Length: 212
Ligand SMILES: [Zn+2]
Image (cartoon, rainbow, N blue to C red; front, top):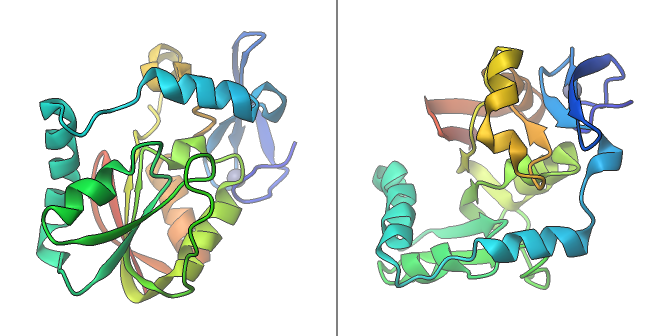
């Protein structure tokens, strides 16, 4: 078994709760991942995503989107260009940000795969509740890195995995079958190291990075 983030073979069975819930812990990057053969296929994933579609006119969704923009408020500018990486089906952040004169492109491998993303073309990337879905985290983070300009910022939103296995077992986040990779602070430090990103701020569930 090779870790899909760091490619290390030094990982061990972490927990097995049922035939569909089998997790490995990587010694190298401290990531925990679902056994690759248990990942849902694309069509099942899509069905699952369609269970929680958001509508822009819902107050809860609007305040959720606002909280994302507020998290990076001092850096936001109408002269900058942003990318919502893994935007989902609604292009929610793009449409919401546009009302505040912010330009956000939307990319999603299922819903918005056609967008032409410009290398080094973005001042900021949002990956909101996305990185836990990555089958190939290293490849995805390298893609993000190639899209961001030097000095650009990256905002991730995800839940850090609990340190204790007993808490991991109860953790609702891992029960979503589309969540396949779970990060610790150590995993994010590893990631920053290999990508040459600076860790700007940790404000869980938000994690701020900057490309050097
Ligand atoms: Zn690893």
